[in-house]
Length: 381
Image 1 (cartoon, rainbow, N blue to C red):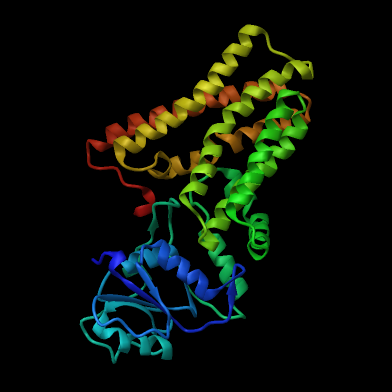
Image 2: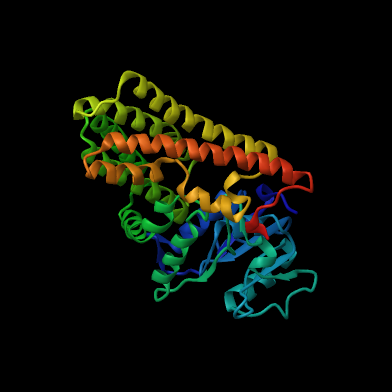
């Protein structure tokens, strides 16, 4: 293992193909810095005479988890599984010249020192992505002008979480890919997209409060779409930041209960108010249930060291429909279209109670299962 800050990174190649609106070299520079490589040297700079060197070719596109794993794994050559050629290496400075030549010429590792491990993507990085909650090998893709579109498509697919809600997983991918590419090629940042989503959050809140449910739903659905786009744009262009992540996740965490509160208030203006007692009960169930649901998820992480939704296949399935924002909108939208927003919010309250019961049961089942050993995600098996 090597401390990444002590690494020198060198990008080889000179590829002129562009990716997500930027030069291949620029994206690779961002990737190396994001995984903690202390110094990124120009290809024409003298090779370091001591320490470790991470050599990569800009004719290849490296998934960020792959770069991160390679940066921590010394004395290693990364080979393309199909061609067998050396595409990267984390090697001692003394071997850097030979490895650089092999990468630039697209040759195999036969002439390289035997103490350097020959590894492929699976051996270096594994196949489980804890951040995106899915089992998938990191990508290593050949980049040319001809393959650019296919490479971008594969990168976009890889940017998706494996366990999420039904709308994000099945409805948004195709249109979100188009909009993400459009934003990237026109220089829009993820934070700008997030801010546009935030404005729509406020618009939906106002519309629901006034009883303008269809207007609020229209802006709300666009907001949920932009909530998909900003994350994918950040991952594909390697432009995510702690501030942007906090802004995005903070909005996602805070706004849903305010929407449901505004929806209940708006029933008076719409002409279908609940009684005072029913209003208090529904708000208590929905708002309190939202908080409790998040608390239960936190308890599961604290108790078992992983997200509740990745333990078993059922848990991942239930994440598709559990009482969060997008599944709740799927209940509220047809209700509003049918002129029954009061029925819709009552159904959301019922579904919230059912979801809470399921999550509480998951914790109990986890405690029972842990008696036979630590819990393990089905995605790791």
